[in-house]
Amino acid sequence: MATKNYPTPMLDVLEEGPWPSFISGFKKLRDEHPDERIRNTINGLMGQLEHSYETKMGYWKGGTISVFGYGGGIIPRFSEVGHMFPESKEFHTLRVQPPAGNYYTTDMLRQLADSWEKWGSGLQTFHGQTGNIMFIGANSVNFQHFFDEINEYGWDLGGAGPCVRTGMSCVGAARCEMSNCNEHATHRRLMNNFTDDVHRPALPYKFKFKVSGCPNDCQNAIERSDFAVIGTWRDEMKINQAEVANMIMKKAKEIGKEGDRSAGRQYMFDNVISRCPTQAIKLNDDDTITVDNSNCVRCMHCLNVMPKALQVGDDKGVTILIGGKRTLKIGDLMGTVVIPFMKLDTEEDYERIVELAASIIDFWAENGLEHERCGEMIERIGLVNFLEGIGIDPDPNMIKQPRNVSYVRTDGWDEAAEAWFNRKREEKMAAAA
Image (cartoon, rainbow, N blue to C red; front, side, top):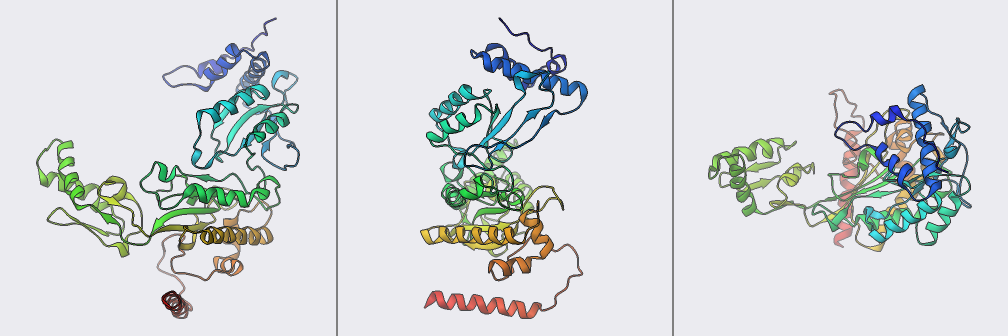
């Protein structure tokens, strides 16, 4: 006997207009899916959603639910109006960690989809705001079966609650010429070493790792992660002067002034030279470019506009920033530079970054307040105390934001500067020995 669909006049309006609608996807599952269980589940979901639109209230409540041996990774959702829409009275979400860089094969995707249609609602999101694959709509009977099945062929739950959350890394060197590190190896090394902290929440609040291979920061690591790894370089930017000249003439043609060298140069001034925040790039009379690398702040604008003419240097590594997050107690925070530059080439380099992460998590776990992110703790106790706690010396490159007032205390500045120069001198002498 066919199940009667709940009326959804308000949801139907969302299908009007030129843009695709998630309601169309819901209806396709409700009306066309071969599994009656999934059709009924989506029917109940749409009924409750219509009811929420009518009353302007949400009816999902939380609770506690987890797979055996894990303390997180599942977002419980129980309906407060389950008596009205019994088909979807339980609609739990499982967070599953994606592969580094979000690289999938079609076989992987089909395998996951088959398992979810077998045990869940068929609704999936690639990817949630935390970076996880979101499998939306499991009941309390089937969610353990789904986890067991996907775990058997290699997938694991992500973080949920006060724990280390699912890490993210950008597409990396496989598809991007701006890459300065092995993003995926860094991602895997960090997550594999803190897996226990992902699955057994025991921290003040969440802690996120994100890896971006260059300062373009496609992962939004600086503003969205507690531990941001940003690929960079410390030698000179590479310049292909022939491509600079080619671009000048190419842009003249694109703006309708083919062969007009002065028009191409003007375009270069307007869109590259004048937009350098530190005026570190100069266009010479012979159509070559000069870069003052000592003043380059790696904003990436010129490299993005001229990827053939300008490329990152050869002495590559990463910068580590700590404490980024979105709004909670004290508003948005950008990460603060803690390690200005470190190489990530050898096994010892990777061990060093894991040890740094462990030191930071341990210090935060001991000193952070309940529901306090790492960056909020640093704001409360001060950067100097944080650096002392994790055993790192202050460095002039530890920049959170440019100075924005002229009234700044400089007590002890000379002594601190002298100590820094002495330390750098000793490091240079030790390296040369």
